[in-house]
Image (cartoon, rainbow, N blue to C red; front, side):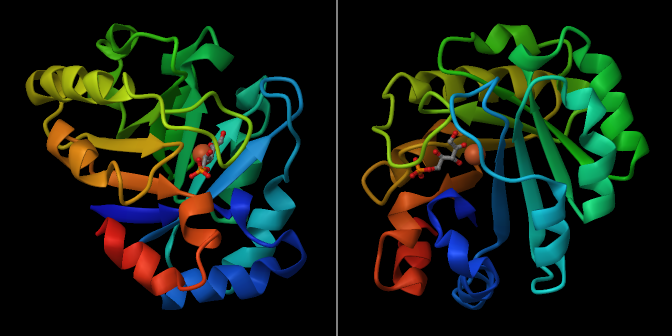
Length: 212
Ligand SMILES: O=C(CO)[C@H](O)[C@H](O)COP(=O)(O)O
Ligand SMILES: [Fe+2]
C-alpha cells in the first residue's frame, strides 16, 4: 500500500516543515488538495504553493484538483512540479480531452469520482488513465467519516480494471485510518490518502507505518 499524506490537515503556517516531516516519516507520495470554493465549499491553495514546496521533497507530488474548469489550470500545476494530476469526472464534460492534455504535459493522469457517482462512468476512460481516485467522503473537508459503501465501489472498479487496465492504481481518499485500511487493501486499493489520521497523530512515522 502506497501512503499519501494529505496536506489539508497539515499546519498551513509550516507547510515546508510538514512536507519534510512526512517525507522523513516514510510517505510515498504527498497529496495536495486544491479547492476553489465552487466545485467544493472550501478554498485551499493553487500552483504557487505546490511550486514552493517542490524543492523540499523528491516524493511523488499528487495533485487532487477539486475545482471548476480544471482544463484552465492543469498546465500551471504541471509546471509547478506535479507528478500526478487528478481531475473530477463531475468537473468536466470532456474528460478524454482533459486526460489527453494532462498526459501531453508529461504528468500521470487520474480521474476522481464523488461518493454519489457510479464507477461505471469510468469504464471507457480506464485504458487512458493511470489512476482512479475513489472519494470515500464528500470532497471539501478533512476529518470526515468514511462512507462504507466506498468499499464495494473499489471492488467493482478492480473488476473493471482487471479487464481494461490491470496496472491501474486505485486510490482512496477520505476517512482512511488503521480501522479500514485492511478492508480497503482487500477490495483492491493500492494508494491510501490520509490527512487527519496522519497529521492528527503525534507520531507521523507510526501512523504511516500502520497504514503500510
Ligand atoms: O480530498 C480530500 C477532501 O476533499 C482530502 O484528501 C481528504 O479528505 C483527506 O482528509 P481525511 O483523511 O482527514 O479524511
Ligand atoms: Fe484529496
